[in-house]
Length: 167
Image 1 (tube, one colour):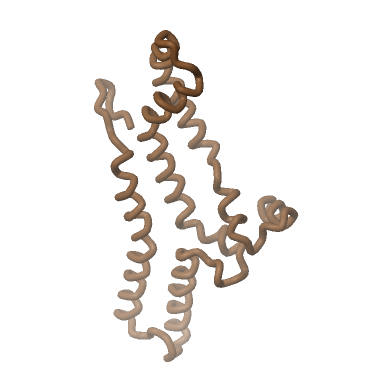
Image 2: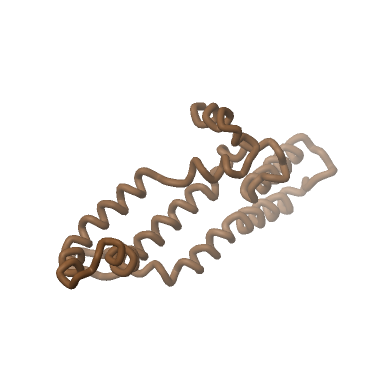
């Protein structure tokens, strides 16, 4: 409710920025990134400054490339978390032309389920066809996340350590 009132106050209802801005930063993921950075970067920072590296150069040439796998994992988890969030889209958007794919597919599934329960003949009523349509919708809704993972796979590397697996 507070998010809805805030978005209404700044005129972001029925706007795609109303979906993008609230999901911009996750405090949990930022804390994880900070903890990872503090653990790993202490020795690297000292070595870089001894070699004459400045703060900006250290950030751009050492810190970000070393942290790229962690940033990739956090980015992927963040994207997956908001990909299936249809409640926020239902709450903020009223114009159907602005609905995200997951919300459109969700409405198709709900419409087919209610019409089959009510016995309407203008939509899918055969139960096997209904299940096949639902499975197809699930595959279509999961496909963008699979493609995103395949694109980000090269940035996500795992390194084995004595204490376990480090991402």
